[in-house]
Structure formats: structure tokens, C-alpha cells
Length: 305
Image 1 (cartoon, one colour):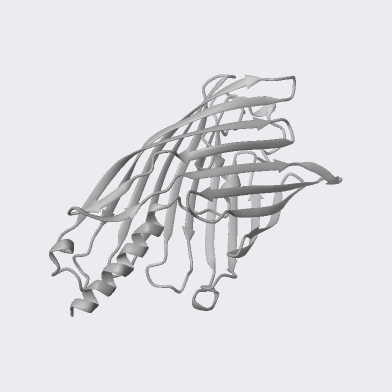
Image 2 (spheres, helix red, strand yellow; image 1 turned 60 degrees about the vertical axis):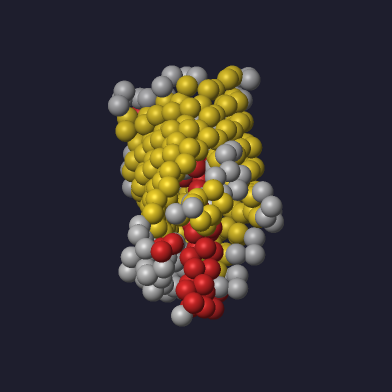
């Protein structure tokens, strides 16, 4: 019995560590403020909002599930705010529930007629909860009751952009945090550093292509990256593919229902050691622009980044 308790506790330990890292998105390009707090939509008069749901590694009990509600709010030509709420769940017998609430402040400077640089700061809280009450380890004093922990989160980033190019460097969580349960350290978050870049060019009439990439470095972990190629057809349809290093190939599709409403979907084909144990990952996103100041005539084509 003692061995069983230790074994289950080790599983919980590993699950908690994974859950405490930054949630992973295949359609990060629709909400890049989760990666870089300096990201701005730079669309005066339009409040851009979205809902995203991700179900990872379907077929695996207790696999991660992530929900994200977000919004970008231009306050002026120089200031833009973004808000993000994320609920990230993992675990079956011992569920782990993470809630992230963040507010980003970005200041935009004009470098030329086409080029801008924005500087962003992120502030928020991360709430961590674990519920072992229905598990085999509930009789262990260390796991006899629900436990929770809340940590402060601070991030920063810079973001350069023109009409068809962007690049940025950021860290959305500068403060490493430890999570304790009844005095026992069960998880430690590491600082993440991101680099992003993308370029939009006209391929043929009514077709735009956007190659892009995101590089992620977690302190004391190997470097990883995503490479993507997206297309925008007749300003209406989006089709794309991505490759996440040693992890997955990804198919992406989007549809602009009208000038304000958009829906997107992605499917991850796993190529990691888990490929034989899951049925892939699904992600759906719904985007809506609120044109509160009736400035829609200023934005004749949909935003591609």
C-alpha cells in the first residue's frame, strides 16, 4: 500500500508540474497577447474579443483541457489594454485546476509612417487547486483535503510591426513560483521566453500567405518552436499548416462569417511518444469585433495578425 501511495503521488507530482506551465495553443496567432504582452491589434475603435477551447490528447483520461476568454481594447492611438482569463484542467483521479487572470498594458510608439513598436507589461494572478478527495491517496495526511495556492504573475514584452510584418520578444511569466501542498513542494514554474515573427505577402490575386514562427525557451528545458504557413483567400477563408518541434503536425482552418465574426478550428496530429496513446488534439476559437464607435469603414480587410 505504501508503494502504491508513493507511485500515485509521483504521478500527481508530474501532472502538477505540466499543468503549471503555460497553456499550449495551436491557434496562438488569434490571441498573441498570451505569448507577448506587447502585442496590439492597433485597430482604433474596434474591441477584439474571443473565446477559445482546447481539448488535448483526446482518448487519454485526465488529458489537459483549456478554455480562454480574451479581449483587446484600444484606448487611444498609443495605449492598448488586453485582458485574459484562462482555465486549465488536467488529471482524472486527482484533478488539478488552474485559473489565470491577466491584464496587459501596451504603449505604442511610432517609428515611421508604417512601422510601430509597442512595449507591454502583464500583471495578474494564477490560482492553483488540487482535489484528491476522490482518489486512492485521500487517506494520506498529505492529500487528505483540497488544497489551493495563488501566485502573482508579472510579464513583459516588446512587439515591432508594420502593415505586413511583425516580430517580438517576451516573457509572460517573469516570476518563478513554487506550489506547496500542506508544506510539501509539488510544483515549480519556470520562466518562459518567447520569440515570434511573421510576414504577410500577396501570393496571387485574392490570396495572401503568412509564414510565421514562435520560439519558446523554458529555463532549464530544451528549446522548442512552431513553424506555420497560413493563407487568406478572398478575405474570407483561412487555411494553414503548422509543425510543433518533436510534438505534432497541425491543420488549421478559419472562416470570416462577416466583418465582425470569425470562427477557427485546428487539429493536432501527434508525432511524439504519446502518438500511439491518443487521438489528437482539437481546438476551436470564436472571434468577434465590437465596433463601438462605428469605425468599420476604416477596416476594409480582415486582420491577418
